[in-house]
Image (cartoon, rainbow over all chains, first blue to last red; front, side, top):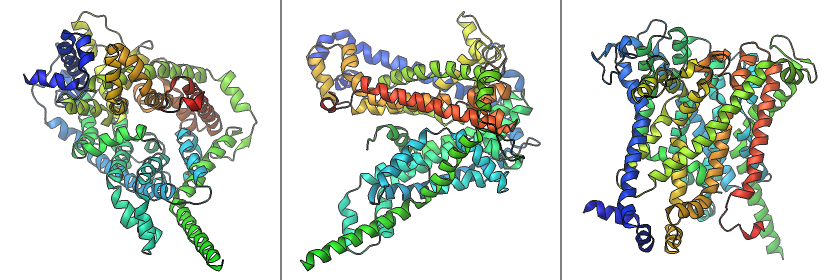
Length: 300
Length: 311
């Protein structure tokens, strides 16, 4: 009974069409949909599952036939082994990733909130041209920027530090400026007008009135920026040289370059690089999913 | 009279103050545009006409880098071919897969939230880690994928160790992450007014006709967005290729993508001038392809309410 009710509710308002489409379709379609969805979901989850169980297997069992769908024995010590591997301080890498992604995320949100607000709510000569330029810079390949900035930071003696990776974030990022501008555009003009009449300065209007209203958007920007920085590979690859400074993605890459056959440790380390983001995702799922879909759909 | 003039003066005053405030709000970004966009773009362009190894100052050599690239650098053509192969398959497959998945997810039935979450999860895995997982899954002898193929009686292939199959394997890896664009499609689907679909159904349109003549046209702006994003990101594939094939594009240069070639030129050989020329070519390629897509959008993208203005 409940199933039928549910099926009916899909076609709310479309009675005639449903009648013409035929009775069997009405019951078959949702069922086929579910079967397909389950199949796709399993296909998407298998790599995760394989990573997790392989990380807890004996190295010899990962590629054993017949396939071993459950580790036997469960080697919890793999995790410990990966964390204390000589020459590869994965806990240190983890901290570096948190530091790097945290700083970039903070810098990005601070700068892009201010810049996005300026573009959305204040009038100044050349604003629209400047915004058009901002959007079009998103088309510039990163490598075009990386070559001269690498040379620049080399001359400044900043290779082998996090400065080239973090400082630019505090000056803004085209994508997040665009994102946050869209949110500021949606706020009612009366609010800032009223505050202006009451004698509030522009900075106070921004900080005390507008910023709290876009808090969900700031959250989304912070999370997306954090995740993308956590994933970042190219920047750390060219700027960092000392292994103790590596973030997880680079540490993982270096570990694989030296130990191609230590599969259980490699996959345990991959788990370590993924798990914090999954935890973050489940804590902030709403903002995260909103952020993934928002970017494409809010039109100016 | 005097009142009006005073009013005008006051209005001019507030306007000027607002302009100052606006400029100070965007000041950091102005700085970034100059220092981390304009300066690097112009410098890369300049360096592309020079011989430069970082240690010695750049030496002007005119078009030599471009001539070398097109006539004396076989790896250039190999990497262009690899990247084109990858983009031509990964982008359409990714779009079709994401759209299909979004259509499956687009219902009010219970439990959809769980599927949505599961499909979004792979996007969270850092590219280095996801590539390592897939290297294990694609293991030619005893990896999970070949084992499953064998179980159902299909022939197995060498995947990442076989030059013929290494790029298809990288494309499959990219499809694991299509959840991001599927969710964007899903949001687009949910914007389509149910009334339109109902009206079409009343007029006798079946599910396929409703999809073809109502859903698809209304979804074209989202398709355009996902297409542009997909093309740009596939042109930039780097991490996955480097983890699989290193800087030599193992096996047999089959995973030597264009970005890997530039990286090798710039940061392994320190041939910055040559690398800058390659970067300029990448920039132009992205620009041309994006412009062509946007031009073609006039023909196939439907914007609500813009029909008259297009006549």
